[in-house]
Length: 254
Image 1 (tube, helix red, strand yellow):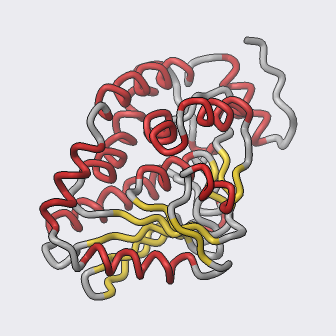
Image 2 (cartoon, helix red, strand yellow):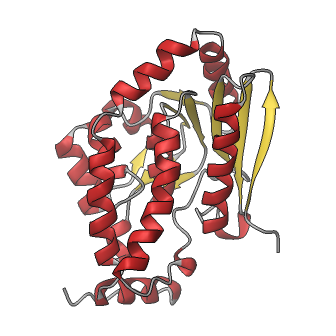
């Protein structure tokens, strides 16, 4: 069984980061999160890298968080887990290099959050997005409560977050969740076109525009760290996690 990893490949001034954890459908396991963070840190310091594409291996962008690894003992441990996660979110949203998500297959849960933390989302026409955090007794995290309303509006964000609505890529483009559509299997190709365009632009205006557009993110992440840290300690989360691993419907007690 291969380990969770993130493959890095340079194509001119574009860095392609590929989440490669096929046995968990590219879930954001701790090792994946750390690898993404390390790669983005290096990219920020690499003057040759002027744009970054994030994608997933084997026809799936990312199926969410690695629930099997969500063994959080108390609220302080939950807050620490979120603090580490938010280092990645800040690098994506506030780092100077533009990020383009190339989405094939599912972008679910944390995968949807990673896509929305990117500046541009390119999705194959048969790609699908879903939040679904509530199904395991957690709120959406990795900045999704901040990014999603800014893409689709507060009302639509509530529908997606509360009712686990699955949004296909054409509908996503209509409501602002997706920026560009691609033929099935061609999301990376289109994302590379967009990345090369941005790589040829002046970098300073892009970096400063990213900073303006992410104003308020730190406050949102501070609340998320506290709230999710508490939810990790609840009986509903323990039941939701157990139900997921046992492949049954959860019985939440509130």
